[in-house]
Amino acid sequence: MPVIEVRDLHKRYGDHVAVHDVSFAVEEGEIFGILGPNGAGKTTTVECIEGLRTPDGGTIRVLGLDPQRDGDELRRAVGVQLQDSKLPERMTVGEAVALYASFHPDPADGDELLDRLGLAARRRTRFGALSGGQQQRLAIVLALIGRPRIAVLDELTTGLDPRSRRRTWELVEQIRAEGVTVLLVTHVMEEAERLCDRIALIDAGRVVAIDSPAGLVERVQAPQRIRFHPSEPIPDALLLALPEVTAVEQRDGRVEVSGTGDVLAAVTSTLARRRIVVAELRITQARLDDAFVALTGTTEEGTGA
Ligand code: ATP
Image 1 (spheres, protein in one colour):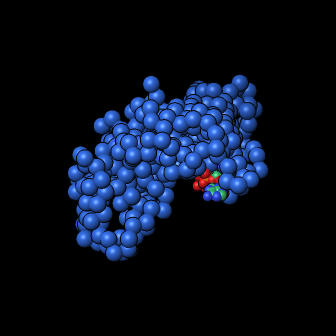
Image 2 (cartoon, helix red, strand yellow; image 1 turned 90 degrees about the horizontal axis):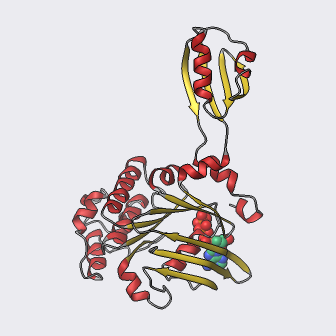
Image 3 (cartoon, rainbow, N blue to C red; image 1 turned 60 degrees about the horizontal axis):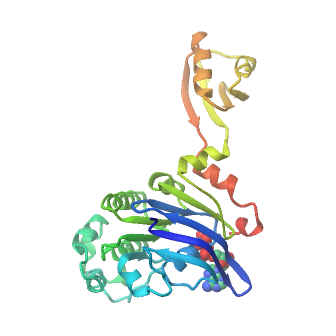
């Protein structure tokens, strides 16, 4: 049975329909991503799941609970990292962790969580004196302090430096290994590719695809590109004769080949037969951001910033 089930979700703000029709199911132990352009309806969708907003249509079940009806029970089982979560300026990190821990019957070890997120030295620092990235990491600690069965993380690593970002990704992988299901709203393609088992791609309030990161990439069939410097000049025709090759460009001794299928093997074996050595070989494969661009932004709302 899925731990989160969203069926035909519909949500309006006045005349504006933010979520037209969103359905997906998240299995226990998954890291499930919600990805989409600005204004696609991602935050609205997760806020309905968290019980923070009231849907205008559709049904949501989280661990069998109805977020509108069973809010208290839901809050005990679901850890939420809120976007722009603000605490009182004068509250220290340690006080915030103790306060949030007191809401839960069996909280996690706050010191250990602070340590894992690089905040161990900040226990006595007031919230107002933390940097943006430190506030962000504290929000993650507070989302996890109740040992939730489900963690909802919205813009997990926005504003974090590369080291903090990696540390946070490792933590998400660890909590999943401990059995926590993670619902992740993200704009960071590297994050989605690295962490998510499956992604719902949302555009203008509708789901356009649900698939693994690799599955989404496969759908767009963007060409692969290979660039290299050959040890001696090669005629375009030699490479264009290969069925895998769709285009060849040459400039300043550098060759760029576009193609499909196993174009890399086809090109390198052809060159090897002629004893041509390649240097500075670079391969660009279709990635999740190619899939994102190809599959979203087809409506006016989806292209808006
Ligand atoms: P982003 O990636 O920019 O955070 P998002 O996919 O999370 O976007 P939402 O925040 O869910 O998108 O917003 C969806 C649409 O609903 C947007 O057009 C937004 O302007 C609008 N919207 C969101 N919250 C409200 C609100 N409280 N009142 C009116 N309109 C809103």
